Image (cartoon, rainbow, N blue to C red):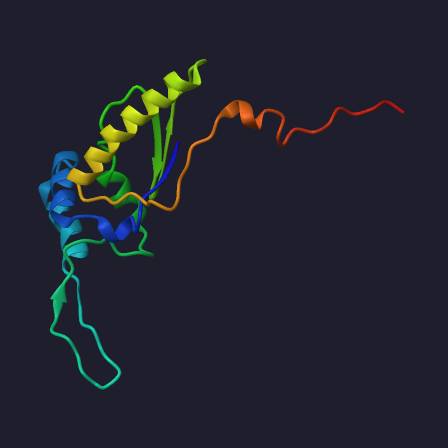
Length: 153
């Protein structure tokens, strides 16, 4: 099952990231420095008729395009709950894989595991994309991408 996270970097909750950095890093000053870089950002909205909104502070988000953004997001999602299925994640992409000879059994396990991961994401304010992602059966793809047998001349 392939899962896409909606606006992944924009949904990183600063308080949650700070908790996870403090758990992970042995030096709390390092965690504080990283959170100063991430958390001390604000914005205003300018309209076409020279009006500007008041200054607002960002409470979510890691700076997109920064070298640290993928690393910080990986730290943010690194504590995914244990499941029967294997999970592979990088940045906004997540794959949940389970093999079983019985398709219905595999579907049941994947559904249960996806519910577990979904609850975790809801707790940590990560949003799942409802338009991207999907599930496929390996047996449907047998032979796809393989070369035809060569004939001797």
